[in-house]
Each structure stands twice: as structure tokens, then as C-alpha cells.
Image (cartoon, rainbow, N blue to C red; front, top):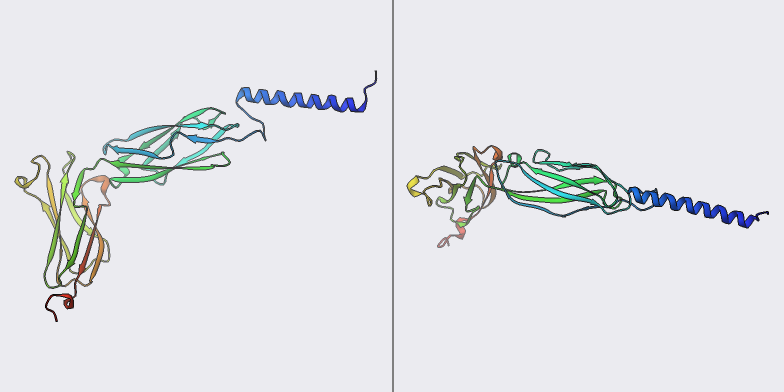
Length: 263
């Protein structure tokens, strides 16, 4: 029996269809997809990492689930953060099959964080065509070794003919004794501004178990500027706070013509 040309085309088409269908079925069973059959898709269980308050003397570890909700294997090419000494990143598998997941481990290292309130981000680079670089914001508060009250010094309007001063109090919080080494003013250093600091006698502490220090800023009549808006840093013996804790200082020095009875 002869087979016509149309029948031959039909049979060949059917064989091709069955072959392709077999490949697709096999790829689905193994979690792998052929080129052109879908793409990988990355999903992380959170889009914002808030670690809250973390200890200042030991690393904090957070684990996140990374999922592949696409139709092809997801490959994690790299993990990074702007502060490589503050954040350590690892993932237990760099290739995630379709409908699979992996564990991303984020370790926050407080000894390398030079402040109390810290924010950064984590970058995950993968072969997801829509989210090739996924950015996850991360924030935390490192348990403070001390607190400062108030958190800024605002002199407001001050007269130009006499010295004006304001004081803030440093309260030791942890067990490590805090020593104020010096006060650093961001340049240019304003003439007519100086600081004095020292320990407060124990019988004057608000809490007998919490040591206190004072920092007093003084603006003298020879202040060279009328509008003062600067920062000074409290430099202490706390190793991770080598850059100091910044405190904002503002003042408006009134000119003699603004004084009552100057007319």
C-alpha cells in the first residue's frame, strides 16, 4: 500500500509532536526545562530585613528562604553588601531547581558597625531575567554601650556679648566602662566654640549603678559666625565606635543691632 505525501507529512508531524511532548514531560519530572520553556524566578520570604535590637558583643544570624517559582533552574551568581566586614552572606545551594528553595544565611557582625542605628542592603545576583539583581534593605539597632541626652544641642538665639553654654549627659549602659577620650569638631573649627567634659561624681548620678559623664559646649562672645550649624563627635574607648558618635550643634548669634536697647 502506498502512502501519500499528505499522510507522510502527517506522520512526521505526529512523531515530532510526540518527541517534543516526551522531552517536556521528562524535563518536568526532573525539574529542568528546555530552552524557550519558561524562565527562573527568584522570591525571598521577605523584601525588608529588620533585625531589631541586636547584641553589641556577638554576631547575629538570620536565615531566609529563597525560592524558585519559575520554570527553569535558578542560579545564584553572587551575594554582596556594601560593608563586607559588617555583613557575612552565604547560601546552602547556588542552583535552585524549579519549585525548589535554598537557605540564605545573613550574619550581622556588630564589632564592625561604627554606630548604633545601622542600615544597608543585600544584593542577590541571579539568572532571573526580570530581577537579575535583587536588593533587600537591612536595618538593625546595635545595643548601645551608652546613651547621650539630649541627642543634639540647639542654642537657639544667643546674645553676642556673653558666653553661653549647654550640657549633655553621657550615660553608660553596658558593663564596659566608657571613657571620653576627646571631642572632635568637624572642620572648619568655628572660632569662639570650645568643649569641656569629664565624669560626674557618683553621688550625682540619677541611677547609682549607671556611671555618667558630662559634655559642655560653650559659645564665647568672639564667635566668628552668626549662623552656626555643625557636628561634633564624642570619641570614646569603645572599639567599634572609633569614628565617634555625631551630635548636631546649632546656634543663631544675634548681632549687636538686634539687642534690646541697641538703638
